[in-house]
Length: 255
Length: 255
DNA sequence: AGGCGGTCTTCCGCTGAGCGGAAGGCTCCC
DNA sequence: GGGAGCCTTCCGCTCAGCGGAAGACCGCCT
Image 1 (cartoon, chains in turn yellow, red, orange, cyan):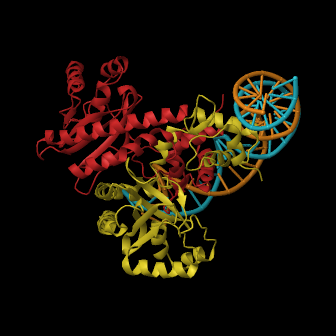
Image 2 (cartoon, protein in one colour):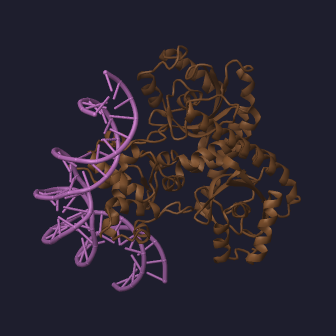
Image 3 (tube, rainbow over the protein chains, first blue to last red):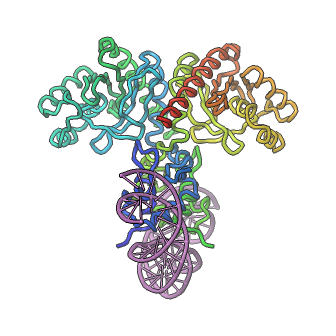
């Protein structure tokens, strides 16, 4: 069965990965699995409609129109809109890299990120993915995930991103147990050399963990645990607000 | 000439306007100008690819996959990423509705918005549009727009959103002159009854105004001008950071 | 119970939009 | 000059896309 045009359009758009500021037509076709002619025609049509934009030197990037459509997605917009003020306070308190993430397909999906001119550069990008075992938010999400998810991840390949990445499943299980006990996760140069983080869960309805937030700082800064109180406070305040928001939605549904 | 499938896909996605949490299939087809059968097929294909999501009660919404694609759009992502820490500080300082906007097709395009549980509810939505003449950010963008744009907007219909909306072009011209002089714009219940705002320009390369930021608060709160220092500071700091970022990009391009 | 209005789903004969290999042009580099 | 990589255009072929019609479902009202 041949692929529909709409499916090909999706392949073209999916060719753009987080971090790709622009792609050549040839690279788009390679990633989308389309012949050049077909890709050329579809990319042209998507450019005409504003979904893609062509740069002066000939390559393409995601268009502003797609941004306007994409930001309307309820998920994860509702979460990030509620979270933004707490992330703002956390950023103001720490002046470091603040992040909000959710669990998606056994990976960390970065929903929002705040960093200032003096923040540690990190690899996360909004809309991008990171591994669960090597990031603060990832460890939190893993700790509070259902046991099947956790075991599936721990049984899978655990890549060493730096010499400090914890790749031993038993050691990770012990860490996850501790995270569930304390409500806090830490990493020490496990994803990026020099970068350490403190992370905590964000709870929604029925105390379920729906996200995690974190601060990432340079290792040689002050003791990382000094970030814990601010992280815990943001976690608590956002969780409370989410619960209230859910309650409001339930109230609205029944009245 | 008939419309290509890719163009129809764009029409379907464009049917979703800011504020539409979900649409029925029939409404999507109505807005996209498509027969039910054609729409049904395309919407089904877009749902299969994750661009749209179908809700249990049968209506549709923008899918998370489109969010992930849309957030990669360089414009306005680069601006908002640089702006976020300054918006964060402005929010923390004021605890009110903070907004970043750009000029797009003679309208205000809301690029980012921060509001907390106690913030004044406003009509702006990320990705949504608002009029130039009735909002703080709009007046700033108009004041520093090229003269043709300003005259075109002032010559066009100036809707009265509340009884306080300034719709007299000459009065608006005088306001714009004052805004250019002081670097600040104010509104008093012109867009929403009860809501007042203070706004300032965000400058990029060559001192060009590329955006505007604002705080919106309840009228019966403290005197609005108390917000001015924080708004001006955020405006100044962000503009400086943007200039430095441009400089860095220029340096990178030549080395 | 029945009618109405709105929604969504499926059918299926028809046809032109979509297909993509080939050829060619352009730019950059060695 | 030649190679590599990119992008553009052509054009004969064909089946994916088309959409009106019919029908199903649901909720509301009388």
